[in-house]
Image 1 (cartoon, rainbow, N blue to C red):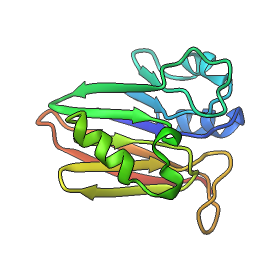
Image 2: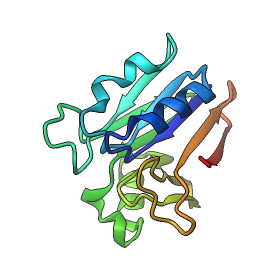
Image 3: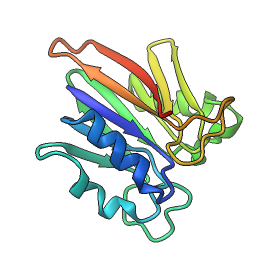
Length: 162
């Protein structure tokens, strides 16, 4: 299973369209918030059969998306949130604890515009960064790919747009 993970696209859609085109076909696309209205269009950009999972970010003022989602995939419980309710700008401790409390082994967030991938105990915590307004050193737009095998094994790839 090939899963594209993005966040904080802030309606600058050309980069997202390009990444979707380059990475197709996809089994799933996860958007971790701040699409700012583009969430209504993303379904038109992905291949047929691509499952969409999207949460609302702090700049998605008129969105009807959920604030948080819990998914079950191949034996994994995955927690999706934008992250601002867990103060991720100050660190991932609150998000980590929420994932533990929800019995999730993968937690995904956005909001900081910085890529992040870390395993804490039994929980993998990740942030794909931002395709539109990156804030990490070098400021390259970023996203992540997650590969989930039939046996439930998972691998991740941090990707940067040049």
